[in-house]
Length: 122
Image 1 (cartoon, rainbow, N blue to C red):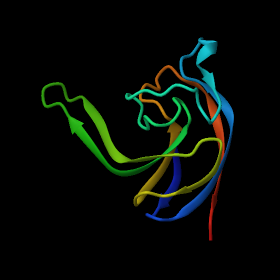
Image 2: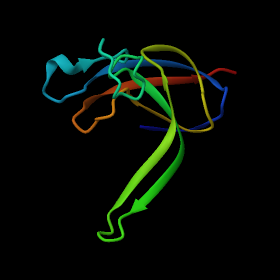
Image 3: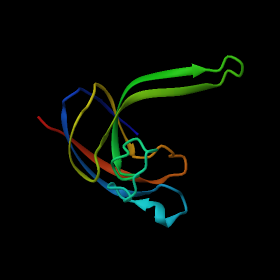
């Protein structure tokens, strides 16, 4: 989710998150809050943090690639991910656009929402 905020390396923010999501629609064992499930895998963006926890990403670059044969366009973005969780501070790791989402690579079968309040430290 795009926050609409352009951020700079070293800026400090305070995050407060609530709500819940399902990492697999229809599976009650896949429900979690902003601290995620106590599962860690190498396939998630932040492998050292809980699956599904609230994570930030600073998007630095977006490339649109077009298949010359089919004309199909795909978007590839690069950026730096960082942990947020339910509540606490975070220092921005790079310049770019601040995005928020679950610490998971496969989000097409997710449902629910986190509600996040963002405060910039002066």
